[in-house]
Image (cartoon, rainbow, N blue to C red; front, side, top):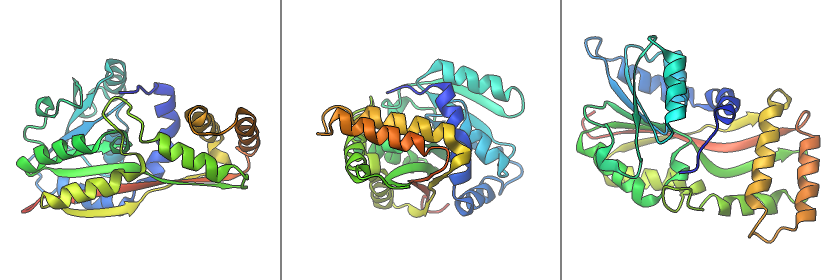
Length: 266
């Protein structure tokens, strides 16, 4: 799987926290806190430095046991360093493709943030089957949905977005990526397995206060679409220069979808 730096994860975390749908989180937290005699186990896939842990804890998820799963030991070490003894945190370095080996035993919740658009439909099916086997609730937040809107506009915005969305289906180490199709693919797989699925928009709403994040986003999009999508270097350079010149004054919406799914009987 393609790696992510601590600096990038830190840069995007405030936007991620602001974007999460509060209604879904409130419903989820009520479930997790429903039995005061039980410390629910949360397995967080692609946990990185623990952003999901921080988000849900800040919104009321207390007395939980967190199993943070990631392929990158450096990110897991950073998560442990940041959380110390404040929460019960277990770290698991694992290949997410080996679903049978993931530490899902006894889990009340399987969570992931900004992950499912990076994985394949086959892997979604395997994860859903494993979760359904033990009646585990599924919370998948911040799945990219293919929308990006810039203000002010540039003539190349639509072509760049089309190329970027095609690039989002590239294999990033977890099979042909679902990209913008992630949420609908998950919904179909979960409903086929008997889950009740709730979905809410959770877009990034970025403005001048997020200039550093917007600038990195622009550079990342440019890098993703530079080769293989029919866009000339000169046109892309003009687009990037224009976008960066407005990163401190313009606005950007990046569409995401949050999903919360309940197995039968829960």
